[in-house]
Structure formats: structure tokens, C-alpha cells
Image 1 (cartoon, rainbow, N blue to C red):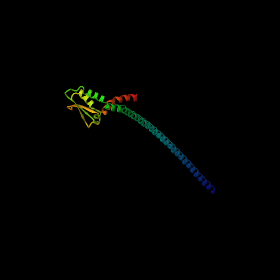
Image 2 (cartoon, rainbow, N blue to C red):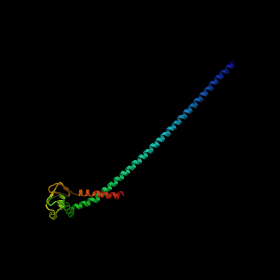
Image 3 (cartoon, helix red, strand yellow):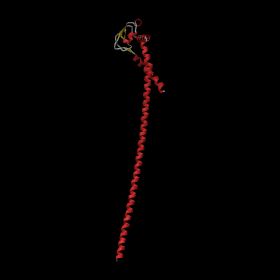
Image 4 (cartoon, one colour):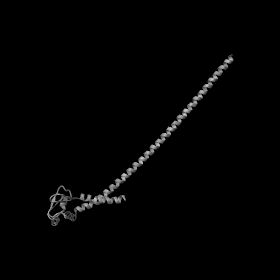
Length: 198
């Protein structure tokens, strides 16, 4: 009986151990599956993060290239505009200043402007201090001979050049270095565009 009891105890003990080992194996297998699942999920998330980072980097690269291209175009456009402005200044400033100092040009300009005005109107020529200093008596006399009723006055509001108007003051035409440059600037810009942009 003691022997049977020892056998029964041994059998129960062995069954408990077998069941515990089976449960441990099951727990271990479940833990392995869960670990594998967690690892697979982690790999998938890492792949997703890498892909998202790659897309963002690609988008950033495209945006940067577009910004750089736009900046380069703007810089080139600005440079061409500055070249045109410098060219206009170089070509126009000196000659315009020289023309406004040339007595023959000034006389021809005054005569041409007043040529079609009626004799009875009379003409008033207002000159700047700068122009008045250039005009000598012979110049004034020559103009007065060719333009009937010419009156030459000094206008301190004119910084340069001169202004022509009928004595009745109905309208006036102003000739300054700046006006002369502005007159020729569109033509010069067109030519500069052809040179620079072609």
C-alpha cells in the first residue's frame, strides 16, 4: 500500500510537472509569437518612418531646388535690370548734360519749338540760373531776331534747362536734362533689351 501510495504520488507529481512544462512551453511559444509580432511591427514602423523621411527629404529637395531656381532667376533679372540702368545712365547722362550746355543745340531747339506758333502770340522763354549763365548777349540777340515778341525771363524754380510758353500762358513746354533723358530712355531700354536679352 505504501508502494501504491508512492506510485500514485509519483504519478501525480509527474503529471503536475508534465502539465507545468506543457504550460511553460505554451507560455514560451506565446511569448515568442508576441515578441516576433512586436519585432515585425517595429520593423514595419521603422520602414514607414524611413519612407516618410525619404518622401519629406525628397519634397524638401524639390522645394529647395525650386527656391534656388527662382532666386537665380530673380537675381539674373535684377542684374540685367541693373545693367540696363547703368547703361542708360552711362549713355544718357553725359550726352544729355552736354546737349543742355550746347548753345547751338539750345538755340535750334527753341527755334524748332516756336516755329509753328503764331506771330501775334509772343513767346516767353524762362531759363534756369544754370542756363542763364551759359547765354551771352549774342545768343539772346540771335534768338530775339528769329522769334518775334520773345521775352526771356529767369525762373528760379527751374534747377536746369528752360521752359517755353506763349505769353498768354495757355501751356508750357519744359526742357531739362532730366526731361531729355526721359525722352530717350524708352528707346535706349528697348535697344538694351535687344542687346542683353537676345
